Length: 106
Image (cartoon, rainbow, N blue to C red; front, side):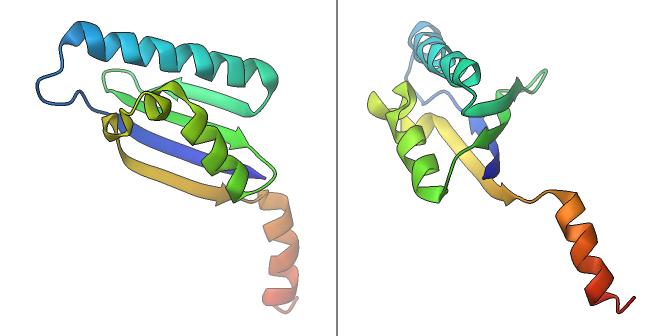
């Protein structure tokens, strides 16, 4: 099942730039491994913003939770750095188009 992920990365008050970017670097290494394994289908950093947008492919919502909590940002106790999380299950539009035939009565 595919999920859209969006999250803003925020430097906590009092954290140095160096520590912030070290944590994000560790996170990026795990994210690239996820891309290489296929669990993360797409991942982008929004240009000019500290926002990450991705499409994850997991069997179910429990797997999404497990994967997120295994990432360095959570494992190191810095989950407050990821704010305004959006996580939406995605459905192939072709399947919806087929449902519309019945819903529209045609």
